[in-house]
Length: 350
Image (cartoon, rainbow, N blue to C red; front, side, top):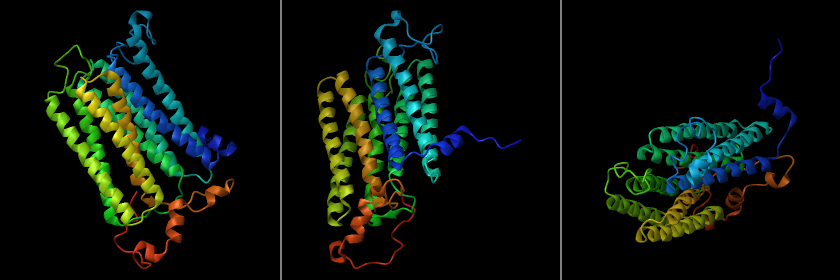
């Protein structure tokens, strides 16, 4: 019996997408991951978590909401429908990445990782409904969406770079400072979900005992403290990158992060001093997703994996911005003589 090719292999033999198309497909997964965060927030803030009374159907007798369910049923079902759109977008990225020649297994693995996270989050969403909007499950639902966003950003970055061994563009202490920024921003996100879980938008506003049993003001203060830590680390990294003359891309991404931090700070204080209005909280959740994307882009810009080669696109065959800057920089600009590789540079940094 002849060997049977799987569908992805058949597509790869008949279609060769450009590297630019693969990168655009990866960017689409990032956009959809952010949209899912926004629509998930809308479900929570409009008290539509039980708009569909069961899962995977909307009602025991209907896959879609009925007119008697009103706006809550439409909001909840709309979020579920967007999960289907997300699956299509992730699937398109997997197909495009698999069809690229030469095959880049690391890229297809990231695509499949997104797919399985989406499946996991769909199950978590079902458990959320079946448990009557348990605040812990509601919070884990948001964190799973953040995990999806993380892998989507990694996919976007990998789709635009080569496959050489990763090379640090800054010294190890600078990378470690950037790691601290990532960890602090991650902790800020987790604490933010706990803040919401202790307040009126924990899940079901009609049940006061359906909240995380922590003092709302104390956990909010902890959230603010970590926000200041993120600001401090970002400022420290800015001056450090300037001092070591880091690549312009890294400093540009850090400026984008400052914009997200400023937006989040303003929105956070507005919602705190105005009784947690739903629309402002939705803006805060959107800002949280964008801030996380910005933090990841800063961190990933501090290493290089060489240019992305594409026979059909000479522009992509040119050295990356970071590589070109490193190659043309005068030794005196860097403050050191041309150095031999040292043990302080980690080849395994991602």
